[in-house]
Length: 48
Image 1 (tube, one colour):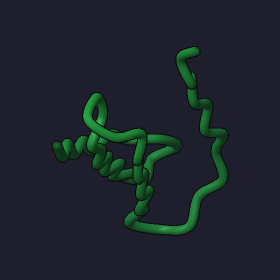
Image 2 (cartoon, one colour):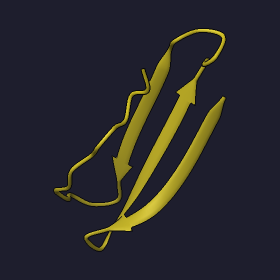
Image 3 (cartoon, helix red, strand yellow):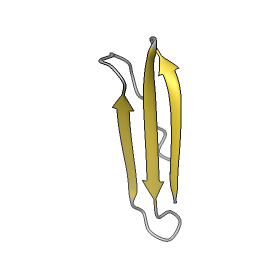
Image 4 (tube, rainbow, N blue to C red):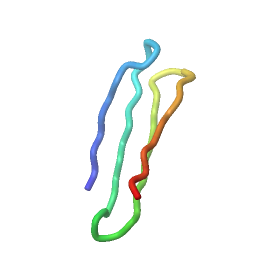
């Protein structure tokens, strides 16, 4: 399963792509791309 989302953060477009095989397997891949240099925090919630 793959999802992509683009948001504006600090006047820069940020694309977050998420690909996973959950619930069949536990593999998750996250890719973050920006249109320009930017500094920002990323918070991830990992369910138990």
